[in-house]
Image 1 (cartoon, rainbow, N blue to C red):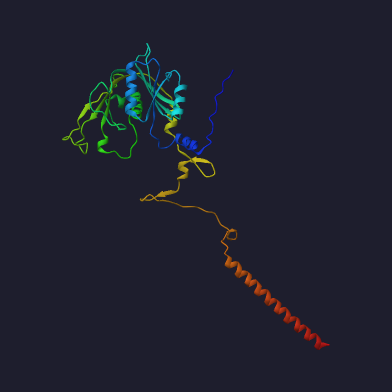
Image 2 (tube, rainbow, N blue to C red; image 1 turned 135 degrees about the horizontal axis):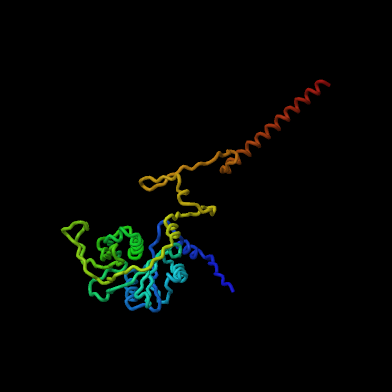
Length: 331
C-alpha cells in the first residue's frame, strides 16, 4: 500500500496569509531561530550544554524535550520540525557507545538540511558551575575567532560560518556601550581537529572607544566553556549554491512574479531618499479622453441650440411671406 503525503492547505484568513508571507525566503533575512533537540539517550553533560545554550539564546531558541532522531541518519524529522517552528538552525545532542557526547550543529535552507557538522563535546563547564556575573537576557555577544584553522582549512571556514549564525543573537541597527556584556572566544589550530570555546563576561566598560590600550577591558570567566572535536560532516552543495544565488521575487498587481532587479530598473534615489523614475506612455487619442462634464456646459449648449431653432423659424416665415407677395403680384 502506497502512502501519499498530504498537500499543505491554503490559508483561509488574512492572518494565515501574512504568516506564510513572513516565512517565505527574503533578500534580508529575519532573525534566525534555533531548534535545540536530542535523543532520549543523551548524556548529562550534553543535556547541561543544551540547557545553557537555550538560556543564552532566548528567545531565538526553542528547546524540544521530545526525542528526535539523529539528522545524519534521518533528516525527515528535523526538516518537519523546521517547518512547524519556522527555524533555520538546529543543535542536536545524543550519546551512544560508538559516538559519546555527540553534538551536531546544522543549518537549513528552505526547510531542507543544507549543511551540518558533528562534534564530540569535552570538558564542559556550565553556567551554574562558575559563581560570577552573568550577561543580561537577549544580550548580543562579541564573537572572537582566533587561530590558523579558521583561515587555512575549508571545513573550519564552514564551521565558523555556522557558529556565527548560532551564537550571534539578534540583529540590531545600533548598540549601546552597556549592551556589550559578554565575549565568546573560539580557538582552532589546523594541525588538530579541536575547537576550544571560552566565554567571558565584561565587568566594566570604561574604555569608551574600545581601541585604546591604556584602558583595557576586564574579562571574567562566566562558565559555558567546552571543547569540540570534529567528527563527521554533511554538506548539500546544491542547496548551498542555491542559497548563495537567491534572488528576491515580488508580485505585480496582475499577479505575475518578477525579479526585484527588473522592478527597480530605471528608478533613481536622491540624497534625501526620494525616488524618481521616468514613466513612458504611448500615444493618446484626444477623442477618447474622458473629460469631466459640468452641468453649466450642458445648459449653455441647450440654450444655444434653442436660440438657433427660433432664428431658423423666423427666417422661414419671412421667406414664406415674400414668396406669397410675389405670387399675388404676378397674377
